[in-house]
Length: 285
Length: 294
Image 1 (cartoon, each protein chain N blue to C red):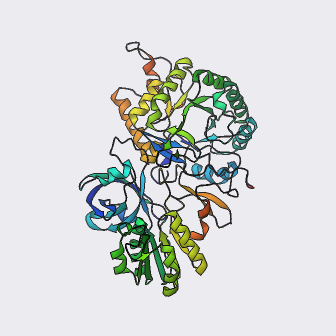
Image 2: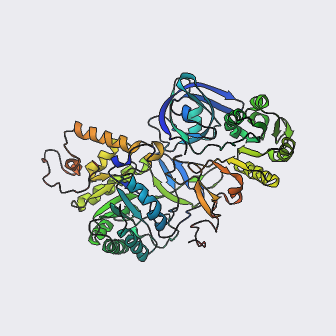
Image 3: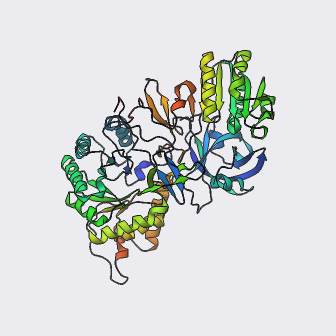
């Protein structure tokens, strides 16, 4: 872990709707200046006397130096916790812990990178794009979602990327289909050296498969349900193959959320593979 | 935790239950949030005792943490082997015997529900552990008579009792129409179980006033901790609160100190079990409690 996380009581600066999503900018000095692309924050929801015990994890979309440092989160309402967040107004306070997780590794030398975002997973890609461009990398975007209002950040991608390809499953924006349908073409055209991806698990699996075909590294940022975000609760685990070739159930919060795609056993997510270290009846038991 | 605060300020750090072999645990989802609580079915994921002893325990010792090592097993022999393995390891402050983890796949053996098998485990762990390392029996509230189980464990040689482990709960996701947890059932923790835990501490302290009790179950503030102390606990443990507030331990410790000072107590031991005594009965004479979080 590059930077140690802090807990701060931030003040909401702005709230806005972005198509199907909500965006929340919070003044959180200490969190903002430690954040690298790919980091996330754990947000306490429901106020001081909340009955919701677990923190909600959100990727950090944007960091700005205003007011000592702000972070912007993008989310969609999925339950009572995110509904509470969506009801926050400017000047409300928000309890944040961050930055958490391991950020995206950046290439040492300039290279060509394809950034793939599914739904609001693209939120964490723009800060990454900035960092890559500062290192002289060429970046190309591929963003996709089921429908046009759920493609996040298409405009910004068009401004930043050498090329930007959009896909929607209903055809309401860009190409009809999924990001994995167009990714091979984009990689070939750009002669990409590396792929970065963030989005739903099924998309990450597809993107990794394409990357493997081209024999280029894929860095994926996974979304797993977390309770604590700080490595204590052991609920956000997924099977990942280690350097020694052994599959372990690793924590998305502290060992990830960024993994090398080909190391993640996507087809076994949600299970304990029989050959994982310590699996019931497994050979390591 | 060490990235948030100084672990040496804690009375002690209790590890997750260490098992003999590495364990991958249960499939996900392993966690479901419930009103003021949390269901979990992690299934004792851990690296096994060898990796714990070579990597984690020295790490804790290096940081000066007093470590209570929790052990979990499927048979009396496994508990005993674990205790023996820990006996010559430096940096073990106490051994906690997890008698009650409902997550263990081995369904037939939930030791804490049966006084005699709980006592058997405790006795053999006690015999395998160094004389100056206390053995703590962790009990579950999922029993008909917790006092009977507590008494058996003390008779078996337990130096202290920890209560409560998570009672078994369940939730069903009405959207997917399936259980929320992959394992079906899970242990319930958080403020939702605090009244249950306080009741257990109260009953056991009333029956066995000389036995040190470590109270736990939904402690999120200093007031919650004091509630356990007044019911009879001489130390208080914090778990799920950490998921909400990584600084919960130092905060609760500070709040508890302030509450004790406000109420005119010089030390925690004077408040232990005070709720059992009617007002005006005067201060208690007996304060022979060795463990204290302050």
